[in-house]
Image 1 (cartoon, rainbow, N blue to C red):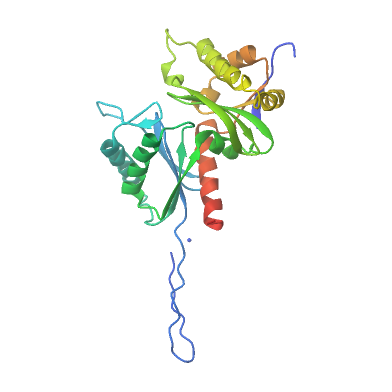
Image 2 (cartoon, rainbow, N blue to C red; image 1 turned 90 degrees about the vertical axis):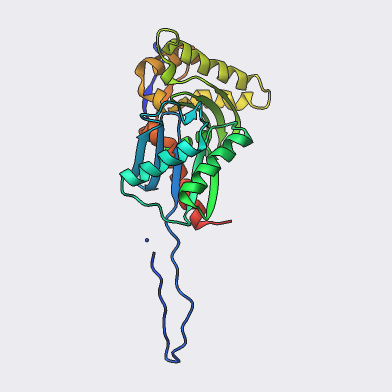
Length: 269
């Protein structure tokens, strides 16, 4: 973790081998590389390999949003936008790849099904797996080990979770994010929302000791909110804890999903 703030005062080849008996052996097939996807409220992002991320604003030029508060609300339009992203970057997705998609924590089954319809239509994956964005963010930030309190502050959604060695123990979310910051919603109010979600986690007796341990370590922030010093400074004030900003906060979850995809390809079970 980097960029901390402290409180004041404190590859597809097929081959046929022919032996001496001239009998053909089965083709040696190589699976297509895995793909990771983040259908965010502000940007659609696709991870094709380490260091290669495609990104485009969600619904740019459209009259109505296609993703709202972490939910795909227009499946056909989102499908078209994702196809356009690939086409504009001249990056045809390999058919039959393993795909790992970020999923906002506590998503409803209907929300996941809408995302599944989009990804199946565009990528035709051999396997489609979902990973909670908070877990992916921890992995992408290189902070999955140990007990961790993570806040994923996105454009329209704020998620807070307690993780133990990469496993989500408990989580909360609020439908507010950096896109809401204006005269009505301030950085202080958004920081207070994070504090409220942390307090709700502390209210659970079985989770309270983990929250205490995690706060001593500091809060890891990913998402667009981590790029706003005014917000992270307010979080230090209201939480009374160190706040760590991920090195690449906007793509931390996508990077983590990409790493998960590579791991799943190596270990199918």
